[in-house]
Amino acid sequence: MQIEVQHSPAYAIAIAHLDAGESVIAEGGAMVSKDSHISVTTSAGREGQGALSGLMKGIKRMVAGESFFQNSYVAEGAAGHVTFAPTLQGDVAVHELRQGTMFIQSTSFLCSAPEIEIDAKWGGARSFFGGEGLIMIKASGSGPVAFNSFGGIKEIDVDGSFIVDTGHIVAFEDSLEFKVTSFGRGSRLNFKSLLLGGEGLVCRFEGHGRLWLQTRNTQGFGKLLGRQLPPRES
Amino acid sequence: MKQEIKSKPDFAFLSLHLNNGEQVIAESGSMVGMTTELTMETNMKGGLKGALKRALGGESLFMNTYTATADNQRIDLAPATPGDVEHLALDGNSVLVQSGSYMSSSPGIEVDSKWAGARGFFGGEGLFMLRCSGQGDLWISSYGAIHAIDVQGTYVVDTGHIVAFDDSLSYELKSIGGLKSLLFSKEGLVCEFSGQGRLWIQTRCSGSLVGFLHPFRSIKPQKHAN
Image 1 (cartoon, rainbow over the protein chains, first blue to last red):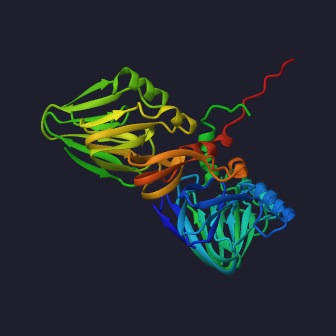
Image 2 (cartoon, one colour):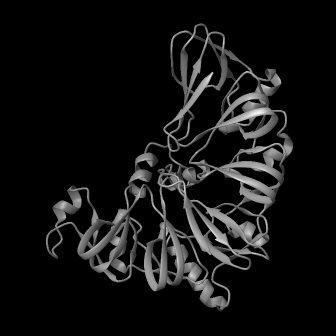
Image 3 (cartoon, each protein chain N blue to C red):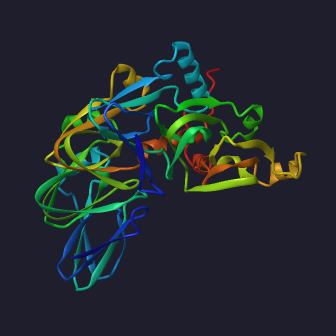
């Protein structure tokens, strides 16, 4: 299976090219188009997993802001392709995992090879403080994983430490340790910066590994437009 | 008439250069700027019946015809959405265009809204098509990039991503997969094309953006009964 990215950076799509019998897993609602002979099955877990384990994974994904169900696209009998698009304007990046693990911001996951195990990961209680959806999807195994950004994607090879606004994290390799903190100095919370600086919480990364950032923040965009729209009924 | 499409693909717009007597028809509201020796006439394209049907499809009732009254005139046209503009040259063939993706055409192109019929309304996602046929130029626009696919056999597209397709293709609205997929896959209805011809799709869907923004709206205060 190969994942090709076209129309970068503003309106990128991922095209999964499948050989006969191959499949790709994708977020519900992401499909744009496909060859007719590619079948779609919807399940909470992966095939071969127990029903209970699949149910738990579905619930965890739902809490993480992802769809409870994931779709599996299978090229029945002949090669073919499926195209997937993110919801908002922005880019798509593909990272090839080799017996590795990476974390992806829950709303940035687009599609992956079926050999990749997808699980929602609790960022721990601290990440809920962020209030900016810092709940990560844990992807592990071998094969390509495609993820999307709001705005452009910037790759950073961290060697030592680096600080990122929680709303701009797209993905990072698990070789990086991360800690959600306020913008203050040292380990003490600096309430003035937190409340008045407009920077909210940041994520501090330590170690060696790759980090992907997005150049816009979905929450900022949503709040800007949401308050200008008429109130909804419920 | 000379054409240039600039700022492709993210914020594309169309510049047309017209000499005395040359004409172009444009979707109402698409004119950005123009030189002064052009006249504009508004009419209900396709007659009253056609215009009313277009209005049902969420389209404007009117289209504007611009006529150059001197040489070396220019008009700039832009679509409503951020995205691409594509030029199609028609030579007696016809193309079906998603009503919101029609942008402009030369006078030799007939724009007909009769075709859609009841089937188009099934989509619930504004799958209302305009049939453009004849000889001349047609310009279509998209939300996101325009991605062309040469269909040979059968091909499936989410209805919210269709921009235009050759009239040589036949289509059918379908649900994807089985009942469980229909209810839980979030993929809704799709359009299955068959035959041989070109299909243009857009890489973003305005309905998805609206779905993203909805939770950010404030909630109306509840009125208490007593």
